[in-house]
Image 1 (tube, helix red, strand yellow):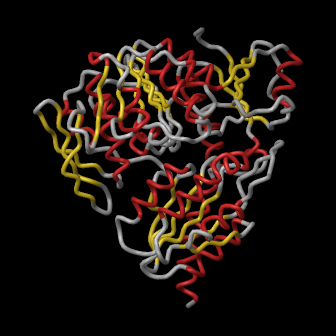
Image 2: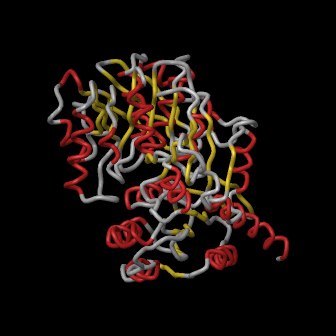
Image 3: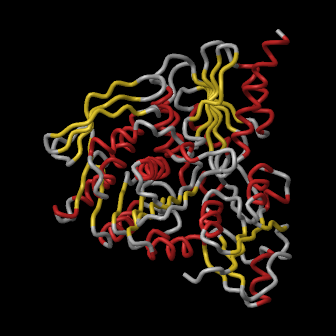
Length: 470
């Protein structure tokens, strides 16, 4: 890729856009962008951070796209009528998708490690990135979430790391089919489950992804990824499991705690104790994926396990916002059925009632996953738990609204769980503040909306203020 090129990101604050913009800026390219959230006055600190790094920000009205030597970067969801796209076509500027641009960078790296899967890929990316970085490998890491280990006062939104080494570790997305663009030296698949695409299509996408890799890390505890393993030559495969003794890397002797899990990783007669400081059985699976990938990168098991003990997690991945009056507020990215199940299982490792707020990340996902979402909540909730749902997040554009939050609430209630739909999220917050009692945990869940983190903090503050009033 040519140095000192000019890039304009349409939606630069997005979870996939921001880290890519940071990587290009750190490599010496000229970067600018626009964002609807900036125009609406939302998530101001993120844009202040970008501006402080010398990235020019414009309204999303086309005014930032003025030259044909700018490459305009868009997400797959951006519509042709967006003013930045209209302006790019008017001046003859090339347009690429975020995934196309990321794939160019990834495929050009000496050692590309692509981490894919329905759930857990962001955490696994952060874990492997931290292992490699703490052991002096200086990787470049592209993630869809802020990695706490890399946060500093000057880099509060550390969803990307630009290193000088051979490794380019990147989260790879299957939801838009862009996984087909990547040619990894090492392919990691955490799991495969119904999400944005039907299983038959996902099987093809993931199968082709691992077929292009020199080596592959697969989860034998997931039926779909285990099916892939049967078609991989033994010399190319590194498998992991919590229950299959035939796996190359086996996790055993799990001892959960409020803040994490201690377990033993075993490989060919060798073993290492792992002190993991993020909770949940699903995170042990993510840790095994990261350890197996580290082994494929030439890292000794003991060294990788020792480095993983320093991993502090990602923002909005079961992140404890704080406690007040005996109530703990947790902020979480769970938005698909698998992630919701994992979050509820982790929360129920500790005693107490759950007050759940789930904000759907769009009307399309609601329509696609209605039955699976109902199943996830109905099966994962326990007696006394309460689910509250506002309207789905909506930032504009055309979309079918045939399935609503009310449909999910009705389905979960029909399975014997306590639920309610309250259209306004702020009204949901007031309801949660009034409802919370000592020993409860309030779990805020949803994706695509950075203001959920602020909302979670507001709920905690409301519980504090209620206590003062009472």
